Amino acid sequence: MGEAAERTRKLVGGVPWLLVVPVVALLALAATWGRKPGDAVLVAVAIVLAGAVLTSVHHAEVVAHRVGEPLGSLILAVAVTVIEAGLIVTLMASGGSETDSLARDTVFAAAMITCNGVVGLCLVISTLRRHVATFNAEGTATAFATVITLATVCLVLPAFTTSSAGPTFTPTQLTFAAIASVVLYALFVFAQTVRHRDHFLSDEELTTDDGHDEAPTDRAALVSLVALVLSLVAVIGLAKVESPAIEDAVDYFDAPQSAVGVAIALLVLLPETLAAYRSARRDRLQTSFNLAYGSAVASIGLTIPTVALASIWLDGSLVLGLSSLQITLLVLTGVVGALTVLPGRATLQEGGLHLVIFAAFLVFALNP
Image 1 (cartoon, helix red, strand yellow):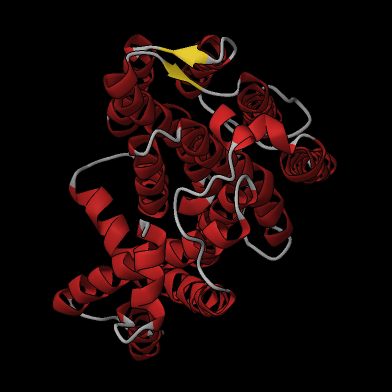
Image 2: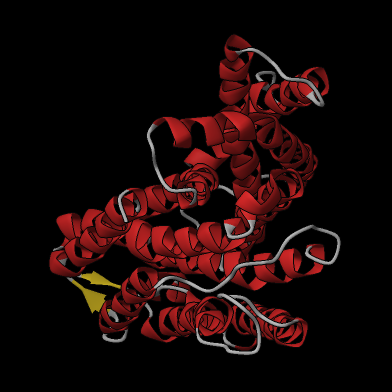
């Protein structure tokens, strides 16, 4: 019996530790909300927070496996994006002017992590096993093109507009970017799940029942859905509790303020990375790409409209325009990414290229 079935038995068959973690996280949130906990408590909260993040994506994975691909990858991406958007808004609400660029830094970091770190890792894993990795170029190219378009409209254009001071949008421009993001994301979801669903499936999934694992029962999927919602609430709240510690760590290492956004993106995308890694190990590279690029599309397409709406009530300006260094890395990602996905096959070299770009992003994020 498959791994998913084994997880399902543990979930509903007497060892419900994956249900205990969300409850513990909510209790920890209730005990620390609105207070200034000491270092020992913050360490404990960080451990609970990490457990809640892993648990939330696990439950999303159970639900995703029940509904199948590519809808399953979409659920995982949306779950991670809800966490990301919640963290950004809660931190911006209490961070003052220092968090004006937090949305930009986090969304850009998420795009670089998924399009280079996750994609590069999965390509390396796959090509070490099969020498040449194959995937569906049509769906993958569609997802990647959507990522680059969203990133350009929401993160590059503000650096060149002249109607407002600094790398910001005017209210009209911000409204357009938010609406365009929602429209592009809706079109992508429609193409991925309805009109061109087969473009996001591997050849094996198109010719078989995709019965690698026994699907969870309806009851297990429903339980996981409830646990997922509770976990997401706990993650957003606990991250707010931990935000001063994250900022203190950035100051301690004398890193730029943008490193806070990188830390948030690394935190929320860690479980997504593990899920993509597991798929690559099972020779499901298309699923890994659906997870990676789907997360990038959701991160930009949903987070930017969310923070745009929240900016009505938040103090300060919303800085979205990337720096010249960040734009250079994004252009490099676009060129290399296109050359990777368009042929529908890749080698170890392409995996190495993406990992080097990701490493460059991390180095220059900490030492610009």
